[in-house]
Amino acid sequence: MRSARVDRRAGVTLAELLVVIVILGLTAGVAGMAVSALRAPPESDLAGTIRRQRAAAIRLGVPQMALIPLDGPERSPTVIRFLPDGRVLGPGIDPWTGALRLAKEDSTP
Image (cartoon, rainbow, N blue to C red; front, top):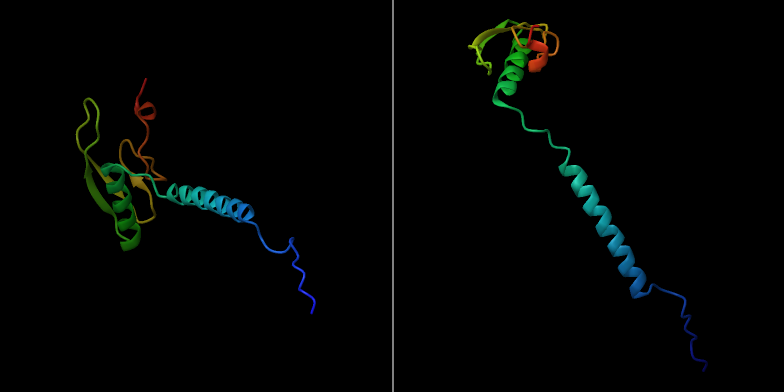
């Protein structure tokens, strides 16, 4: 009987297997960091209040009003009106987006 010849080129070496595992580990690590970066940045209490009040006005279809404390010298709490079409009326607020304006934009020369 003839002995079966073994082809030494068939199969995978341990070094090749380790290289593939390292590459897969690096890919998974980079993907994990990218997914963790997708979280929304934390918002301030004031920005959250404005966002929630605006959403409530749009959802309910009736104007909402809120007393918002604005920071800064000579600033007292102010009433802001949230309209059902998404606009926000009040000092220091962009009327179309509902976002807080920067202090530079609010200051008058």
